Length: 274
Length: 315
Ligand SMILES: Cc1cc2nc3c(=O)[nH]c(=O)nc-3n(C[C@H](O)[C@H](O)[C@H](O)COP(=O)(O)OP(=O)(O)OC[C@H]3O[C@@H](n4cnc5c(N)ncnc54)[C@H](O)[C@@H]3O)c2cc1C
Ligand SMILES: Cc1cc2nc3c(=O)[nH]c(=O)nc-3n(C[C@H](O)[C@H](O)[C@H](O)COP(=O)(O)O)c2cc1C
Ligand code: FES
Image (cartoon, rainbow over the protein chains, first blue to last red):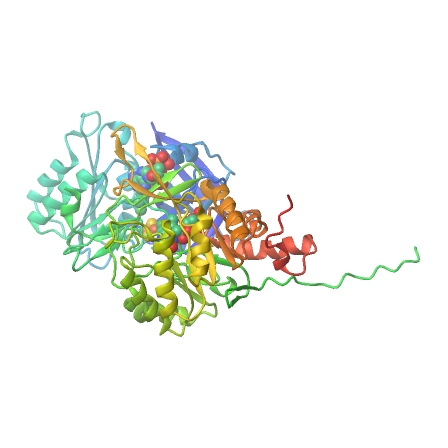
């Protein structure tokens, strides 16, 4: 874990309201495990006050600054503009200062995935799944179900395809790929044969449906959750979720930032999201 | 060449050491309770041996699960929290968290609270049996569940009663942390000192509220929460100043400290030391930066002892 002051390499609007930002991260990138995140200070002022959590989408290397020097690591974020912090982030340009704290959280459990991984993403939920796909694509069968409301919400398809990951797109309005919900595509896919593991990230309503489907079919599921965060390191206790079997008498409270953000579905009390 | 020989200035370092009611700190910078976990959470990012003390999350007799989520909401230059004093409880703290703190060469201040008068007394007793705890910080911003939920710290008589009881059970340095949610903070400050407080911490969070106008619902599940961060600093500085006029025990200034100047402002207002709260979340390097900055400021201003700054306000 490191707290670094660094610079933006590139910031590009890839779809209406969605950006991809590359941030120089020397000796940082190599520490990141799939599913981990960083806390970003969007500008060095007291307002907005808190850092914002973002998954690490991808790690890359820039050519060295001159011969003999090592290539320069960067990390890439994919983000959606939803409020003040992300609006400011969207205005940052090459060379602008930015502070990142991380890598944070546990990341996906790679050991329990088996041979046939199915990734399920809703919109910006693709963010934590690319590195997972990348880590698995060489040795395992990996497929991606990518859903969104409309075509603008479908991101990074070519990145996944370049890894050799079969990608199935669906949109609620049918403007790209199959018309319908990604959860319907999931139900169909599982009916044709269960993968050895499913990993999901997206809006809570969608995650809940995915969880119900996977439970019924007894497919092991890993979910990447979101929560409001102040610290990102387990100190403020702002980001709690109830673990499976939680009760006042026998509390099982988990921090999304440190115990998560990735959880096995069996470790979470799903009633809290109903 | 002129006849006056330039003597190279003797390199010197100012004294940053301060005394808080019998507890000597290497410098006046420490974390505020609840913003630094039990120390270990920040061990990878903060040089724990460099700060004046480590202040724990508020401890209670039994573990406490706290409030439902959402527990935090960002506000202009600050944040609201309604964590609800979630903590592992005093016994688990001693068993699981203290061993790590023992390995750090920095005094540990245990912040604690109770739901009833008796609970406050019990925790104080337990803390006095823990040699690694150098001092206790008593949080009186809690409702008394046995007496209609009146907050101990808002009533001088209730405050006096709980502090006297704790004082009987705890002989090491006792710091009482005051709530700002009161008309005249000096009334409770005086009562606290009379009841045996060795030092006072000012301030805890200011009660606040934030509403999502689309859903018309409060942003915190608990409806209200405690405001912290730069937004509260002027209120905190004013209260430290008022308390410093009213009592003669050392004061720990807390509220929205981010920069070195902020910490110095509190010292000039009358604080002997400072605590950094929400700023730890934003910049874990804040405390280390403050220690260096205080030293640099003293050198620049030719201040040999940081204590010269305490209460040095010129009006
Ligand atoms: C572990 C984790 C990873 C994430 N990864 C990504 C990602 O890769 N790409 C992406 O676009 N978004 C991601 N998010 C969501 C992202 O953090 C929020 O969209 C962002 O904080 C919104 O900030 P804002 O100032 O624009 O919005 P505002 O609504 O103005 O923010 C106000 C406050 O609420 C918080 N907040 C608002 N929405 C969310 C949310 N959905 N989750 C957590 N906090 C929120 C903000 O951090 C801030 O403290 C992630 C969230 C978490 C918890
Ligand atoms: C998330 C959070 C948790 C806190 N928990 C406690 C606590 O357990 N006990 C306590 O006395 N104060 C607690 N506080 C109050 C802080 O110690 C401090 O008094 C307050 O945040 C003001 O300082 P700041 O503006 O620097 O954050 C908490 C504050 C925050 C933000
Ligand atoms: S964000 Fe602070 S504990 Fe998780």
